[in-house]
Length: 200
Image (tube, rainbow, N blue to C red; front, side, top):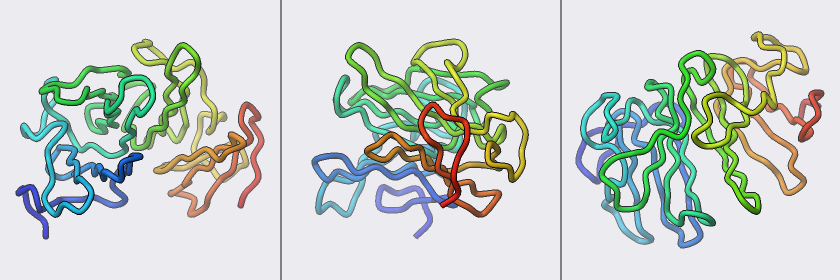
């Protein structure tokens, strides 16, 4: 049932969902500008990010969409596509405010999906920019992306190197990147570090 109580959600389209290794469910409650956590077998959620109205302040979110939980470096830290604030926010478990780890209205416009890759000494974010129809590789706290890994042409289209309003991203075990190319009604598969792709 739509609403703002902890057992009510206002979802938009395909909201961000994440299930961690403890079977805890995290949901981006887009319309209520918050992220809610549901423990296993619980019917009422716990607000873990946002929940202070719509806005750009550190304790607020504006239409959050994609989410990802760090289960390796900072256990329980939530990375949130704060879509209409054009930024990625990190909320450490138990925190009352978020930390901006990526922000650029020019290059990170309307982020809607995020993945994390853990290396030996750093975390790498892969972010779907809905408006720019690109998938960006971004180091936390950097001022600009490290690379564009999909949507290389920089323009919307149906070509093999183009995307149109991507909403979902996922790597398989071989680091092939799958993109929900929403505006083109297709799933695109990109070989990691290779600009060509094969439609699946």
